[in-house]
Image (cartoon, rainbow, N blue to C red; front, top):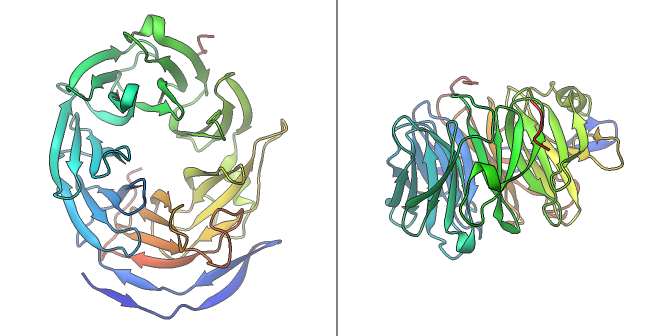
Length: 387
């Protein structure tokens, strides 16, 4: 694998009437694959010294977030890898992954070998997972029509939830323990419901379901934010955005035409989809990250306070790296010179460098491209609450 350096050239171009964007020339490029693989997800270790990338070839590749150096890959899944995450800082060399092959695996990132394994059973698929409970020993997995729990210390199944969401054989669940609440689990599904469970003790549907939020349409992605993780953002499969106070089950803002609102906030192509949301704790500020089918990304600030929501002008634009839909955005909070990494359906990883004269966590960033491109690209495969 070879890297070539190029001079960085700057110019400025307007992205709205009152914002300016600095554009940089290509700084470096690295060949990352030779097939038609594309990137599903990028995840970083807690200290930001290692980065894992899941691919459509059912493999996970490991890189240096600082230099883009390729270290090795983990192989073992036989179907789509749906979620990857590094273990807690006390186990810095362990990476977890789950797949539509029904397995959740743990890998030693020093040897790239599988070191642990659980399986959800025949015909099952695992879409997401989260560790919580005492000492992060309780593993929750969002499966097809079920939420399964294991005691990770002995790999024994501890519980199964299957009645809290609308009964649908095609239901899949996103699960996440609430930051700061090790015994409180969120599950979100295509039925439009977000459920909160108390996982202390013997877990069951009847006694441990605490509250439900009805988003009203199929949920694609959710995340916690705020100084005490009291808020919840929710992106749906029809590209709407809503913000909630999950503790009171109260909606703070609802953007039914979020793509249209974001598209009006820059002078580039219309937003086709949303990738993720990003929150700055220091500034108490939330951005929704929108993308175009040609690979350009914009960070749009979300004002959800005061009873009237608004999406503001793009405050960062990542342009010129990707040539297709972007699947994953990884902010690099602990790498001042690097804004973050992105991966997409063009099979490329892009590293975006920060403007070193500005604060990395500020309300506005400037971007340049450090692009890792593949030779080929592929096309995009694209009820009421209980209380």
